Image 1 (cartoon, rainbow, N blue to C red):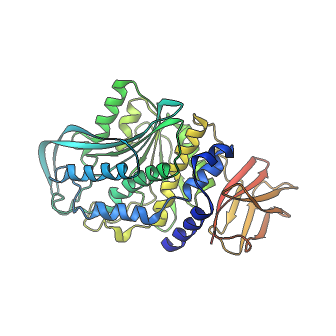
Image 2: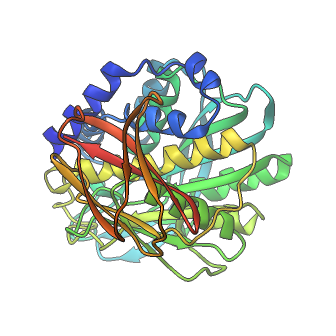
Image 3: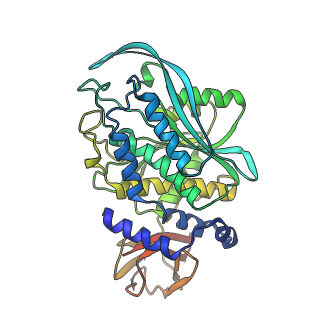
Length: 406
């Protein structure tokens, strides 16, 4: 899977010059989002996870905690982001569970990277993941690999920041990439997001969207991502579903919206901001153990989860507001996906005539086919490996799906 998707993305990158100048001329967000997703690199994210795991531990009380934060800060700087800071704060924790026996206050370090908006700099889109980890079966101060929990989320934040900078994309609204500290023991003390959200609310900042990523690298075989939804943020649930359906090959499980979503996103929700929480479908069986290592992660799956975040950010920035997306996204199905020789297009509410068009990510029309039935087989052997956009007019309106050809 890793080799396949990496090759496909490489082909897409080579055939498409992903520069901001082109995107501003393209006139629609689809080519922008597809170009960005084609630049997501599994190898890059694997290198981030490996480097974080190689630190031995990222436990919040371990003596290397500032070293970990500094490494993340330097990665943001290496992407060409100049507005990067370590946000230090004191965190108290009192816990006596398993090998976790602490009653102490330590200095912790959030890492914030900011790309300022050109038109609406005071409106901020925030993507976050905590970078600390813990184990329960042994003392995490000595070793806690935390590849899935939560080097995977941190890798997604880093990769989205890298892609945005490499595209030379100039956002209209400000983009904030936050690697937060002290999540693992947040229910027994202070956390990085509690500190950050409190400062943000006190300053009166306008955060238009918060995306939280916690454990998004272990695939249970269903290729499914969980959406933990906030009762006050239905537009973000709809946006995420739209991006997942149109631009990724993942399935999704969307939970009933509640007020108390939990985790790192809760302080932002309590402060009155809108947000959504992404997590893998089933909890990694190696969660909080020495077995939470890179060997058990699916980087193809992680790349798709990263794509959800990137798509949500770019779509929101393109529209400068969260659109009123329709949740009825099941009208058009494409399978298999990825595909080689053919695809089967299925329209659940089929009406004749209905035309399907397949576009390359540079906007070039590659194939047009008229559907002859509610389920139609279309040959695609003449398409080169890459990522395409399948567009069909249906009774529910124009439907679009991303297609990977290899």
